[in-house]
Image (cartoon, one colour):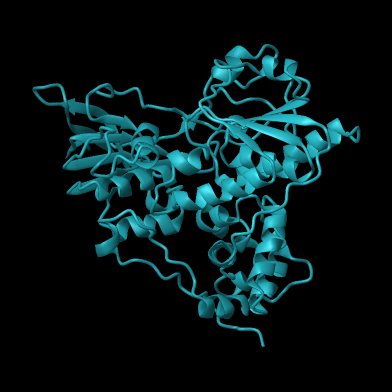
Length: 462
């Protein structure tokens, strides 16, 4: 019998009073009982509208049916057929605007908790199976992937499953891209990322770290070395700043630097030798998921007050509703309809506060959101001995500056067609390197699309 409850099962989680003092995962995952009850809410629609909302086209009703039957490993295998990172997607995908937004149950109640069930299946597999996939029969062709973030790993995984000899080149000393340097441990434990990467390695994917393509090697050198195609999935790791006075003061970070120190370099540990500001009052400028991550990390580092400063209202916050809710529960303060105009210095040249102005919302801009306008005479000051800028990123210019004939947009993104093919023959690109900062699952979708296009090209089916 279907479960016709209008409410999805809540996700068990650590209490705010406890979790804001540790880096352990906030969401604890469904129990078997909760997973079975939630899976029974799925109507197994024949036309599967939820699948159309998934960038990697997971057969969602099929895996949920397996959970309802108690075949958790079967559910995992269905997910893994389409996704190279099942345990990651179950945690960080914005399901509420993608697959769950298409769920029929959402018309008169809550949609089915698709992401929570995906996480359950992946976690069950990781807890009960040490088996790694068998390496496919080699097809004799080589492909290079630049960047080991979600887009690059997905492209590499799909090509490896088809028998390609795939080498991933990663600039940092640890593979995973934004999954290891950007997303905090309390949202995505790094042991899970490591586990997912070990699965790809079992398929035959080789990963070379400390390889900065454009410096260590160029795209042209990779092609000359016998790689028949190159996929560029380098993400968007170049931070943006506002261009206001005081941004060069000590105590001012880009969110990229701050989160990399915390997540990749483990600056939150007492035994870490990575320096980071243990500030009393922290202001985070921005309203996306990265801003929420930075604010929640700052709170865990011991800050007494942490404030989000965002120039629009709560309705326009781009962060996931769940992340905003968690931040509020953990004591993060929100200064909405506010915009910084200057970062102030103390007598030693360190950050001492920010001057802000109040904003109103005018007519919609090209994005469809109402444009913020300054309210005259509304200046106010926030005390802050640390300011973190989380206002967006753009692609690193290294690839485009060292690859002749690679067409790029004025804002820095690589121009690629719907299959990921760039202006250079045999060079493909996708994810944030093409679109600018977006979501993990959209980057994965781009990697999957490019892998299929590369296969068609090499095998003569393009």
